[in-house]
Length: 371
Image (cartoon, rainbow, N blue to C red):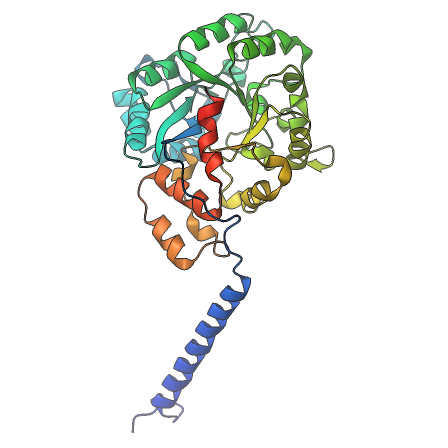
């Protein structure tokens, strides 16, 4: 009989290994069953009409006379290449074909989605100097309204999300131009654009927003996508001024994460929800690995009920930081496997959020808010 170097039969070691594997497997399955908590809310059928993604970015490096600008800091950062790859383009391809290539790729991806029919693509205004002129020295990323409006005019499944720094002396004229050219909302990223939403000087801008029935989509909470940020400007408490003037405000990412005055920003936003009926929050980025628990919280908190809007923060849903495999306690193994095999990023995102319990009304709300 063959034996090991210690003289024990190999068959005995095999039996022990098989027994250990069996015990380990049974233990893992038992533990999984004991810890499994199921979806956040009971999954609901999706709306019959195609879904609108309220929060989608488009990129540009200035190629093809697009007017886009990327700071030297961001150009040197690993983040830019990471973002471009998630759009399905390279910096070299954009230099050769122009920045419109990014919009074309994005439009094609939306067109192949079974669930999402249109996406709001967002311009990104820059920081301005004391005279209200674009300050490239303090601007990380600039995507002009004209560039985004032209993309939306060329592709019927893309909607124009404008971005206007209200400290520009001609901000009201720019706002009127955006509305005339089909803008469905205005987007701010205060911590990068250096906008204080609580500044009383912005009252005329807010009043014009209300007259034009344009929602204001505002980044809230901390910002980690750029090389620097002034996160105090992302405090949800600074949104009281536009809300008090009747502006419809959509707090991006439900203010997750971030802290101000010793409170979590999500708690500060929830308190505002009880006071202002025109305040909403989008669920973009809430399934990222660095925000685990965020979606569960906002879906379960009564303050956010009937106030959540579907958004993706594309292209982030096309990155490894979002995966159904991050939710082993909420989804069955078969669900995680099935969702992970969906190729279209929007269909994969919708399937993940539906399986986790995002209500049908959340998927349908953007259509109403954007008129």
